[in-house]
Length: 354
Image 1 (tube, rainbow, N blue to C red):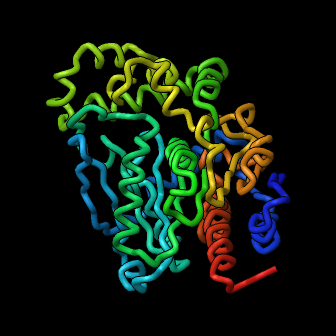
Image 2 (image 1 turned 180 degrees about the horizontal axis):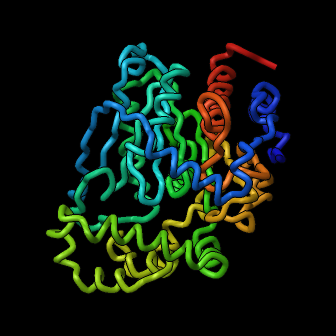
């Protein structure tokens, strides 16, 4: 485990000094002996996930599309004070709010109000207009959802945690918005870094895994009855998408569904690595050397030299968004993320100092 950060940034130096979890090596359970098994254990645990009551804000965008914010409404969250800190979770490639309930329960136990930003076409929402489906999420949609939270809870500490594909949406948001990003801290968890190189590498190194991911994303978007009225108007694009077997190729041919002329234009405006250098928000990044999807070859160790408020933690183990461990909450990724957020909050509130 190695921490990479720019020592010229005083706030990040304070965070590193105060947050003990950042110095705690992740030790997987004995049965999670490689990244694939660690991820598989996470999948098995998902079958026993505790359900959660949620309240949904369904939001119509200016172009006629729909996104939503699902708020935790369990007993602990329901009883939080109005000014409680907030964590908004940006879900995975084919994810939804229901897959984040364990993380949300843990956030509530830490005194945080939690919600999930649902991208277009996810969590039961229908595709309705162009731009409709964007693998990495629409930055303007993220701005809209953050603004809604800020208006409802103007005095609350607000942090965003992007998981896997959600991390790309997050980095693109904080990077493009820069000083205008209306959040206090951010966490990019198991990112792909550079989309073009990451998915090209996945295609070469793990073709079966790549095909599995692509099959799942096609199933989520193109087989749902709720999407058929929209998709029937764009049959030629849909037919080309269905032919694709790998994510890098799928993203390129699906570009028109996201409002772009072609794959090159899509990559120009949606690759997180091209936005990240504009970031002005305290940013925690977590990557694992045994991640089978967002592979170690993608990690940008030079980021600390270009984004001074970024903190990169590279662990030896963890798999892709897995990080299983013994005891409560059973997940190192959640613990270190919440500890990072809480440390930034305390420092900014001048509750602790170094």
